[in-house]
Length: 250
Length: 250
Image (cartoon, rainbow over all chains, first blue to last red; front, side, top):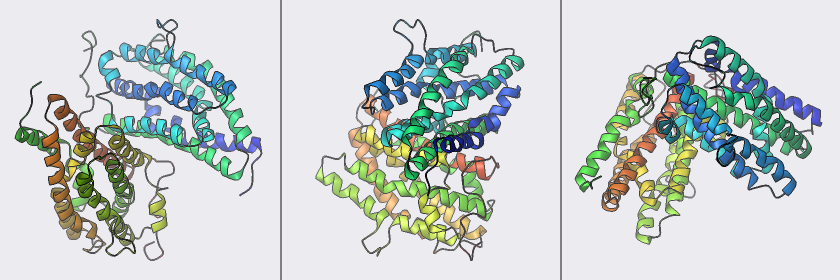
């Protein structure tokens, strides 16, 4: 094994995104091109809440492993972004996600209880927290690098969903508007960190594996949603169209 | 909430098995009725190794939470059953599982590395270990109660696979032969434990939820296998037919 230069390392990370990030997943193609029905969009938003929910938990787990005050000052902004401020002004990303599930007519308590979410989605999210807790800090930081690729998917999602779905408007998609500035800032920092600290064949391989893990964790969520809500596989206990809708939406 | 009698509790547990255990999963119907091709059987055996692998880890995690010597003496037999003895005579369940993947022509190092296993399967298995570590001991024990239902599925599997697949023989299915005596013994003990210790509405509800969790964890594995190897969904990095076969089998 030979050591890569920082530029080669960045290219290798970008290659993983190009081949494994969930912008390639068939469900996202459906979602963005208007092929989903409203219940499939609901299923996606409901399940994706599980992922939104663990982001600040994941970042707190990473934060708890950082021995460097300077590093912690930077990383804690991620938690602020997702949790918002006391009194909820400005609101955080988690609340902005609930604006989407609200807009889709899903009962908020049902969404946040996660009782109708697919087990596969919850397992994937829990795996992410365990990953950043149990692996090296370098791997934990590297696993966040899917944010290098998220602006691409967010732009396609926002424009596609606004264009194709009459039940979607800019206000309910406001989660993504904020992410367009937050994600590149976070990704730039994490990429520099990884390029600086992954300086041996072993640590470089570990960082690349970490990004592969994260891509698989995102991909797995969409597989589960597609399997149940597109292919129509039975899912004992999972949300079914018509369930947990607020009166106006039902 | 009212308290159930032990008999009512047992009936409620059995009802969960009847409605959520993976004997109902479409992939098992395929597997047992001869509708799988050899690569689909390989995909199942390869992925299911991840579950076999964590059983002794799961039981060691439970054991580490038992403060009662008498209880530990009983529970440790599960680890013996799966790990076998030093020198591998008698062989344990894990080794007997590898007799199946060997028989299917899969490279043993590839199987045990789990590099071609589906992330969803690995996440589900990890979720099971986390569950028995983080929940109450009652919930950990109750989550093992799928073994109440496993003789039913094993009988259908062994007779169905022997009948329908010319690449399967009794020797490669020897894992299941042992389970037919081990599982009922383990299940009887765990059922008595749960009936004795789940004596309030809260603990009874928790024990039932634990069994639901375990059923979902098993179901999720088959969903992932079906999605990729029956429905043909892409799976970056996962085993593909033709890969990792030993010379004679390829």
